[in-house]
Length: 161
Image (cartoon, rainbow, N blue to C red; front, side):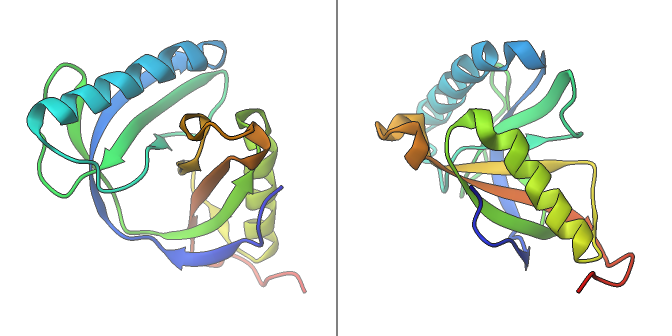
């Protein structure tokens, strides 16, 4: 289930990231260790996260996921291991909150893309999701919340009424 989507201007955020390219079937095995490595690298540098964990898909997911996992930071991070400084840019995005387990994210992204196109916007070929409430909360997966952000081009057609 997604909340009513809306268009917003996202804020630019400095981040610390790890880039991953993995087959769709290997995402669970790669994601957890990368999150641990990212958190450990920040802790070793005395850098506190300035926001929630996110994944920035550099191209639309297919059989291979090409993405960065990251954490917003308020100060620069030094490259170490796979951790690098990064950035989420300020962009016009279609945004919603998805409520539910990770397995439903594909459907939720489809709903957000359909909504944006129905409003006359062209979704870009990349996107990011912010894990507001997830597995680390201890809550039932049906209570998880993921913010979906899909950058859009200016209106390309009159919106459907």
